[in-house]
Image (tube, rainbow, N blue to C red; front, side):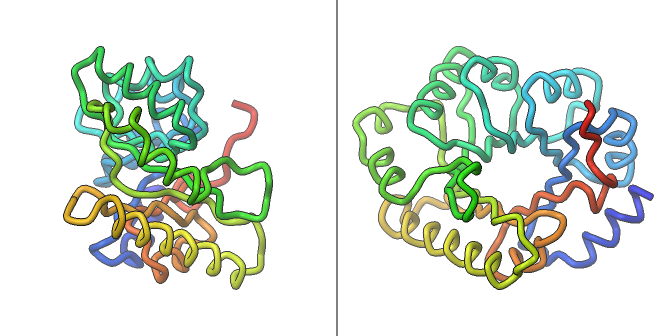
Length: 223
């Protein structure tokens, strides 16, 4: 069913939106099936799991790290990661920059913002982002490239609330673009929307949607 699921989702997405297949906890065989159906971008939220999958799957896969990244796990993904969605502090960005420098890479990153009502979600607020982007430390970071923003909406059936939160993330993106990234074409990504709410995210300006269960089925929580 993975191929059929991918085809259904792709049919709902405009060309301006990229599908990230969220493959966390899923076996390599599921990822291979999605790959065989044409999917090339996969999202993982555990560094070691992502490293292990990267070692055995086709080399042209683009790996997106979408979970909370611990600084002591950065080294496992820096050699190959395509995009880190979840930069939620200046310290984390600095640690990614330091590790990327060892590998002579410039790693693309998104700033994660706290847009949900739940306190358990990670993320910056706009003032923290401004402090980061205006800091002397950031100006010296030559091995990371900020390409946009990411956010996770409240886990709720209230789609009006979800839409409001997505609108807020788009406003943050527009604010940062105007003040810090005007004329920088790489700052273009808005990562928002998951299996249950990605159509709303697309309507509100998402360029990356992170879809897992609608492709692979329910998450396997005992992994």
